[in-house]
Image 1 (cartoon, rainbow, N blue to C red):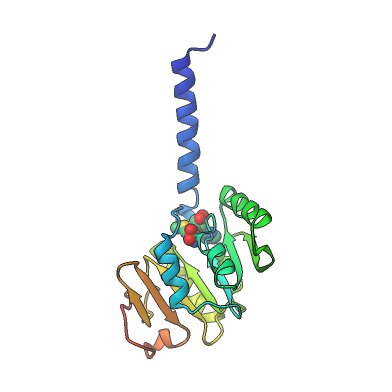
Image 2 (spheres, rainbow, N blue to C red; image 1 turned 30 degrees about the vertical axis):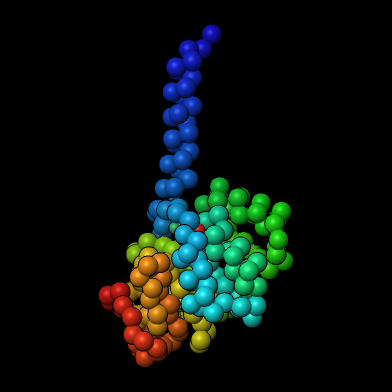
Length: 191
Ligand SMILES: C[S@@+](CC[C@H](N)C(=O)[O-])C[C@H]1O[C@@H](n2cnc3c(N)ncnc32)[C@H](O)[C@@H]1O
């Protein structure tokens, strides 16, 4: 007979390891897991003026807070990139059994290995180091007129066209963001 206290401790330990893995495993790639808050998602999609003509890349798609809203409510074609396998499985299940699956593509991999040349909108909720690494890639690959919306962390050295403090959302338009010429100047986020 197994001691129930021992059993409980083992279950607690395994649960803790799984939870820690789920949140922290992707740190080394650019961000841990935290879903974008609903209000921030709405601001990001509204700031970018997302619509059916758009191809939106969500960089680090998590479990799909942005992916599904952009495809279902705003009618965009969405590419969600996610590196962590458990979140990837959840995303794929949600696409398989949910609405608007024909407009959603989920890619398993590192966002830094993706090609952004067909993106008209890029959304990100990543850590500052990842935003720094992302910038030269965006500058090399984004088509003119593409919008970049970021929650929490700015693109270093770019000038935002809009910034909402309450949701911590930055909007950039390429290539104006690089020269700081578009719209009402917002925070640059350093260099
Ligand atoms: C803060 S969460 C945001 C999730 C999602 N965008 C949302 O709105 O709910 C960041 C996500 O990016 C993923 N991620 C971090 N670095 C990545 C990388 N280099 N390539 C792909 N995904 C990455 C993490 O696994 C995590 O799911």
